[in-house]
Amino acid sequence: IVLAEATPDGRWLVTAAEDRTMRLWDLRAEDPGTDARILREHKGTVDRVDFSTNGRWMISSSSEDGQPRIWDLHAADPTSPTGSISGGHEGAINDVALAANGSAAYTVARTAPSRCGRSTTAASASAWP
Image (tube, rainbow, N blue to C red):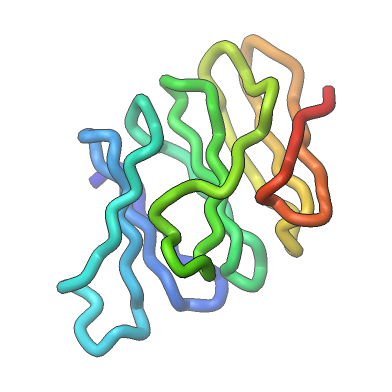
């Protein structure tokens, strides 16, 4: 495991491993260790995540694939991303962040300008320099 982060509301724990997967653990389940959901959308090891304050939205990034993914953790199936920041970075992403209400997603890369995806929902974020 290379990363472990809990949502601000204490509902979920997200872990990432070198096999390019993330696991989503329901901390409110009777036995949180038995029913992790697997998230597999990145082409490299996930090394950054951030959450909206209410724990609904998550942004994840692998510094290897340059394409941040946005996840709706309240969706019936949270194992598929609901969006990404179009026009993502060509190179490695150094960090990601979500606005407190999930309405904007931010990325920072060493080789490119910072990007912000903004919308009324994180699911439909699109990039602007």
